Image (cartoon, rainbow, N blue to C red; front, side):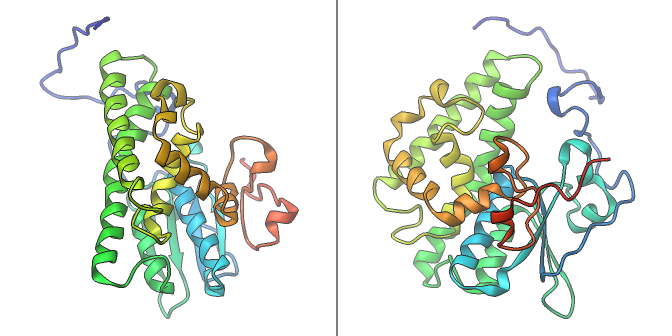
Length: 290
């Protein structure tokens, strides 16, 4: 191994604000609001505050799938949260999610608004609310939830681990990249072996397990994450490739991937979504940065 570090951890860690590369301006060791900022409200009972990252895409795909199934109560307003500008630290957003991470959902359909944060929790909440995309039989439900929580536990190795050190860290550290590349390839192999046995992640039916896993591992398989497809040789995972492409062709996945998206071709972005017609008119960025 090259470039061996001589770094020795101090007895007490201190925060170096300039450290952290591309995200140094928003990463910090404390929580809570940094400024007062109310969240906007739209006309629908479901209010989503998010950004088109993999975790955000999970929820917009879920909502679009529910609408495609005919659940009109799943109509939603999707508001853009610009994390690079620190909008997740506004008082309104912190009130929804004390952890200051997107996405966050507010359900105003009942007598009292219900807040839901963490993408996996939002998927399960919506699945149970509408009685869709999660099995009801105990064995199938257990399989689905096992894979849902597998994603929640595994994706940090792909995102904050491999993604950070491979794509965003100010210094390329061989040990860190090797360590997380190895783990991501192991995770891809776990999925590949599973998908060799079944059409979808949890079995024969499309569920929230697929919706949770696709924006991370499906996107990686399709070369949409970190420009790392060749580095990780993702073409080797043929069963993941089959599954990833099948989901990519679903209209609800295509729509969900557009919502709150601020990267890529302009035609692929819908900064806010307040009505199904927004996909046709390409209503763009009603929250102009100041």
